[in-house]
Image 1 (cartoon, rainbow, N blue to C red):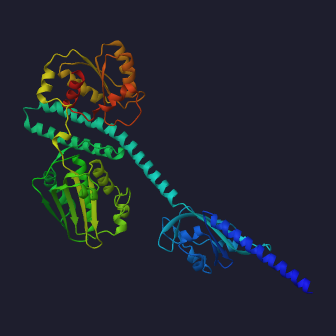
Image 2 (image 1 turned 90 degrees about the horizontal axis):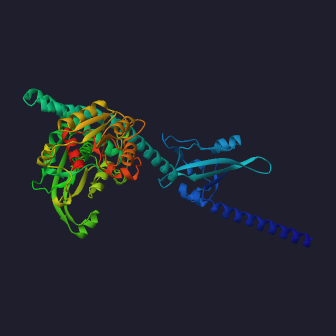
Image 3 (image 1 turned 180 degrees about the vertical axis):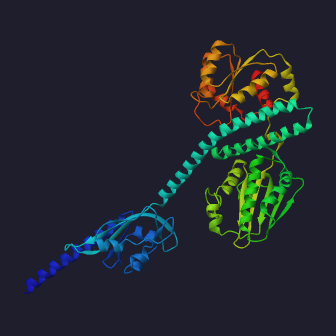
Length: 527
């Protein structure tokens, strides 16, 4: 009897040790899995969790054990934020594996959120009965963010291509309008009333050209042309426009230092930046409020500049302060992110990201101070412009240009453009200044003309059907190396060009061009 009892005890100990060993190996296996794993009993109460599940849910196993999984694993739809039915009931009721949608968000106990993908399957015993559920889920937040950034980048790329195509045609039309206005302006020099109408048309066309250029600069993320700007003069010049934009409920105050140092920046960009921040301030102010814009000069030493993220030196400071609702830390940390907006469907989230990009290109900095209920202050630091830092040696003075045009020019110029009216305008300007011209509306026609005629200079559009301007220039450079080439375009995209066209790509005549633009360009080409 004793021997039998001892043997039974040994077998029981062996079985217990085996169970402990299996349990230990199961723990090691579960703890090694990178995905979250949660097991429940048949009532949907948590029985086991691995460390990955603890990290994502914010629950420790000792606290979660015995609790309903719906409490430990709350999930909502990523877009609608509506609760999603927890899979435990469906799995236990049907005995089938269940997969959650791709838009599932796990709400962690600590308030953080995780985009997840998961599946839930029944746990069956030897008797084939369901004893619980096993839930396996992975954190795909980074992948989702990467996908979102990719979609945003793809959207911006598509926008850039669409804008480029529109800009090409639009600039051609504006070129015709501005060009023939130039010609009429000369003809109507003795009729001031009609000349006034022409000037109005020219100004409107130039506004259209500026708008197209801004769209291209934005969609292609390339720095726009800059010039010396006095911020004091600029603000007072646009004061009326700002007041009308802000409406009567916002009291605008300008406190500008009179002897401001000049800055070097694109005028349209800085006006857009100020307007964007003022509109944001207006939306942050409920009812009546105040917006104050101040400017000043300041000089930073090494330590002070380092704290702001700038180089030591002289800076012009622009402060925009509002009495709006202010921002919490979470919002303030995101305001410069592309596509982040507090205005819902009414905003694109591009305004402040463009302002940030402008300051980066300008080698300046932008700082934000804000408290909930106490308004916001945006401080922009612009490097002081020194006259020797930027020069333009490529432009002829009016006297130099007139001297060039008074010379006898025996050259024959071939103008190539699929916009016939624009080609005719260009030819008229050149013929009026002593040049012989030929014209073609395609690259193929241009090559035939060059083959049959003496041509000294080629002025060609870039974007044309069948063969573009770069391809035409490459053929002409190889077969007729004596011909000087000038390319023109309203939208020169970043297509690859061969070595013979690299210099041409850097010296494009930008559409829409005026009479003076053509002559300036030609004077550099011939001299």
